[in-house]
Image: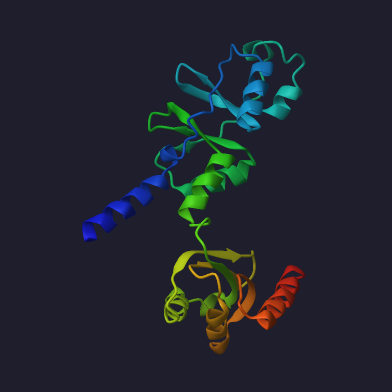
Length: 235
């Protein structure tokens, strides 16, 4: 049994690595391709950026807006010499690093290179969302609970004990924080569709339950949580 658990955990770790998240169906283009060629491929693959590669060497990333600014979209790229940005990530980088770069450069795809800086492929935002839904158990049945905490009061051990004390399990958890603030929000996905008893337990421990997304069997609880959610949205 332990060996099976090890294998499953190992496979999960592998799926968090950049080279395993590559969108295999998205091609790259050459400098001999035209801007029109690039736009067609972008449209087909629902991305607004595509990698320019020459002999396996990554030259840069071109965007649809860059192509629209060209004097003539029908000319090969090596004739119009567009300005290419050059963001990329190493194949063994972690999923979180992938997300950080996509956000930093505000791009729809990030090229992946090996240790010799040879082009391996791209990770698209669309493909990343699909993988995240698997990794975070987003499609698993359950409820979502958002707790407001002071940083110094945060203890995942205590949070887990409260949830597991109600015979439930945490499927995934995330922390949202704002700059220059000692407040955080802990977002929990729990393997139970009705979180009423878990919510009550957190309130007994004086936790600030900011919002919940679940199916309560109690009508009064539904109304109370709806009011609480509207208040949360207005913050």
